[in-house]
Amino acid sequence: MNDKIIIPKRRRILVFADTHVPYQNESVINLLVRIKDTLDFTDVIHLGDLIDAPQLLSDFETKDLAEDFKTANRILGQLDVNYLVEGNHYGPRVKRKMNPAFHKLLNFKNYIRKETQFIPYDPYDIFRIGKLRFLHGCYHNKYAVNKHLEEFGSCIFGHIHRSGQRTIRKAGKLHQATSVGCTCDLEMDWHRTPYKHNFGFAIVYISAPHGFFQVENYTIYPENRCIYVEGKPFMYKITQPEHHNELKINRVKDADHSEQ
Image (cartoon, rainbow, N blue to C red):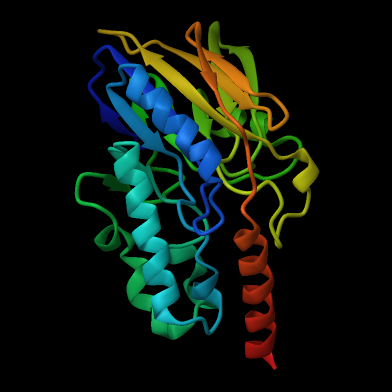
């Protein structure tokens, strides 16, 4: 496994994933912005599926995807994201199913803000800081955390839209895998098990000079009104804009029509 290794220094990293623009939950995004503005982070990392990109697999208008990139770049800027990991909703893995008009979008990094470094998807060339790997994720079932831990060792990932963590001892050393919750709607058209999904994020601490890490995994409960992060209270109210539901319905209808 040929990792992209960043020489470790002391870091405090805000990590989130699966925003799926245009289905982002703005209440969650705004909460993360306040946390970022209050606490001192050295890095902010998005673990992939920044946009949902249903257009890549249908006959949607190019302008629709342009609006999604505009929103995505706004979110990247609000949170000062300096690393964006490629997700599974765009990129080379969907090329064989894509509308040919969108093949140029495979070079995804050309469409995001220059301040954010894009990390292409490659399960065997994983982005790593210190002793912790950062990836989008490639398994999606109730054993996903275990499977990532077995294949990648210590890692943090998104993809499954739910928070989880497992630690094992292997060859005398501890290894830990963490899945962060999502920052998009909890119920989407293509979700198979939306009742298992949750909002969430993580804060990762990397020590110097050996790159040891600690992960604090946070779940955002929609019914709550306050979350404590590093002992500081952050008030919030989770809302679901009606236009998201309308957008999902319209896009499904358009997709069905395009297949007829």
